[in-house]
Structures are given as C-alpha cells and as structure tokens.
Length: 375
Image (cartoon, rainbow, N blue to C red; front, top):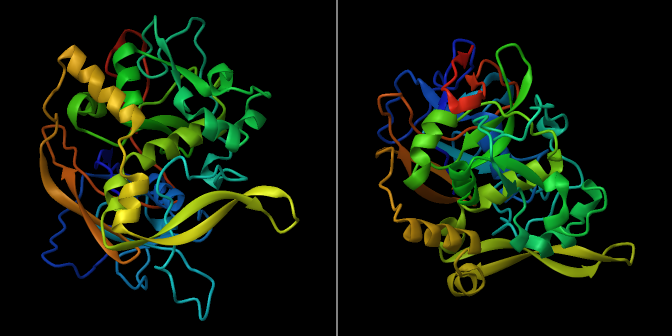
C-alpha cells in the first residue's frame, strides 16, 4: 500500500522492533542501523484510512493479533506490516474491511489535528527571509496547499485557519520559503514537514523525505531530519494538510490495483441535523470504475516532469534499490521497492509509534554547510 525510504538512523536511545520475532517467508533481520519514523508512517496510513487516528494500528501479522506497540517502538525496521482499522460491528474482529481515501481531493480535513501535531514546535526566526531548510538567502515562496487546489481549500473551510483568507493563493499561513532547487522537489512532493522529538524529548519540526529517486536522492541524504527554522508563519493545519497531500502522491498504484476495492467517496449531502454537509460514502469499485475516476495524471506531477524535460535534468536515482518492503491494507498485499544502503547507510522500511526519542535531527545553517547530527 505505502512505503517510505528507510532514512531514519537508529540512535543509541531509539527503541526499535528488531527484537520482535515474527514468521515471514525468507525473513532474516540483522541489527538495523536505519528504519522509518514510526509515528510518521502510522499517521500516513491513518490518513489514507479515513483519518482513523484513534483506532488504526499496525501489526506484524495479517490477523492483527501481534500488534506494533506504539510506546515501545520509535523506529520500524521490519519489511512487512499490516494496517488494521476496527469497524465496530459484530464482535469487533473485523479490522480489514475499511474503506480507503483515494486521493487528496476526496480527503476531508479533520476537525482536530492528531495529538502529535497539536503543538507543532515554534521554529527560530531569521531577521531576513531565508530558506527554512538550508538557511540560504533569496528563497522562493512555496505554497503548502498548491493554488491548483483552490476548490479543496474552499470545501474544507481552510480560511478558518488563515485569518479568513478566502483564497489559497492569498493565505499567508499557507506559504514557506525554500531555495529554488528545494522548491522544485517540494512541488514534486518529495518531502514534507513533520514533528519529531529529539533525545531530550524536545519537539522539532523537521524535514521528512518520502522519495529518494530522480532529483531528490542527494537532497534526501543531506536534509532528511534537518530541523526547520523561520517556519512559524505557516499554520500547523496547513503543514498537516501538506503532509497528507504528499502521502496521497504515493498510493495511486495501490488504488488502481486489484479487482475490487472499497473506496471512500465524498459527496454533498444532508447531515443528521438536516444541514448541508459533505458526506463520506463507502463504495465498492471495480477496476474499470477506479481507472475511470482516478486513473488520470496528476497535475503537479505532470508539471514536475515537464520542468525536468525543459531543464534536461532527467537524472538517474541517487539511491539504488535492493531491499523490498511490503505493507498490507484491506487484505491486499502490495510490494514496493525500498531504497538500499549506500555509503551513508540509508535504506527503507515502514513505521508506527508514539513515544519518539533520540532521532538524529540536523540543524539548518546559513550558507548550507552540512550540520553535525544532534544526539
């Protein structure tokens, strides 16, 4: 269903699940040096499963009897996980027949942010405009919710989080500043901003890369887990919406694959109080229906490919692929390529968790010098 590159270094204080014994065909788990931040992975899956922040969980087995324990796992290092969402019907054992949200357009912004996003850290502010990642001067303005998604902005009343700004383009809470090349891969949805804790339990807003291919590979090795600065002008709600926007870029193949799939479709209707509202309906769709409705090309991805063709910058992947990662949703197993280890020890996995400590976070510095890791 969904995979992330294994870029989170396992620090001396990080808790991993490498000691969990599970039965997997051909499984041979060595001591892991890298994995995927567990809270980030679980939250991404919960978004896809209809904002199931309070109920969805990961497990090591298809039945869901061997759960990933959130309090004891900061970094996920295994190759196979299963997502479960209890349906609240019958005896409560049905955890796999949930519907999935197919794309960002169908996703509804939640009434409240998940707990880990409730207090997104205030970032240090520069006296002059600079890139929130590298610290370089003369940055560009980047939109968190792209102007092309004006309808989504209006339908989800995002003006409530932006001092009444009626247009996504006019919202000061919807922008951050990025260096030109980082702005380009940000538009490609290569990374997002997420909250993580350092080894002292202090929360920081950091860069989390979703992709290590094409133009993003070198940047992922350099900037993954780097702390942001001067990002306090962006509202947490818009940072979270951008996180979801990035997540949905990586599930299109899953949505189109398989004979039948339960899809959550948003339609205008009447709520239980008789008022107009957006109503989510679960519809079983066959392959043809899904291809007809969701098989079109993505606007931002097409623009990104066009820019690469114009610039002649069609680069090879910076990280070669060797390992495989499998996650399962709705009892359908999807296999994705994982980024392999290179000289810097990066690789790929999936994750879930709550008490996150000891992650290697990088400080942004002006002139783009590569900063030391914080332990």
